[in-house]
Image (cartoon, rainbow, N blue to C red; front, top):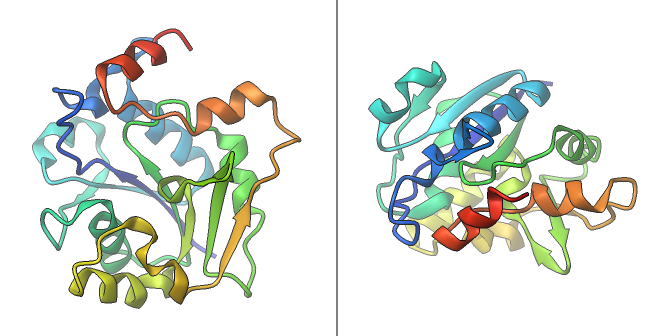
Length: 193
């Protein structure tokens, strides 16, 4: 059962005012922190970006969005379209504290009765740190063609296992795993975590 790690780095970083994937936390760019974690839990790693030269130094296979300016849903579609795996572990480039242990926990929920494992925290879905089976590709493509671009737009068409219990983990690890940096204030916060 092949698993590919997918880093989504296609955003414009308008709220941050600079490329948030390259912002350093503990002296390491956020995107490198994410890549190291995903490498530990997947068979292969890819990067979805429309600025490929920016990330050449990472030596990660890159793909540009097939549907331009369609947001992270298009990034997910691109990953599934261009590669061949059973499962895809997703991480956004602005989540510098993603946890190997939490991803392994989510991966342990895979079975033939589900198409996606979606983590929830405090009642909120986190689809950009979810795990998706290749079978969801047609449902994603249908939503993009209808210009329904919310990441969760295809959830009604697939079988989802939601994960809400993280009691086996230290609370700090859980909180940090789902933390993302969208603006300068959140980046300042990241530097203190």
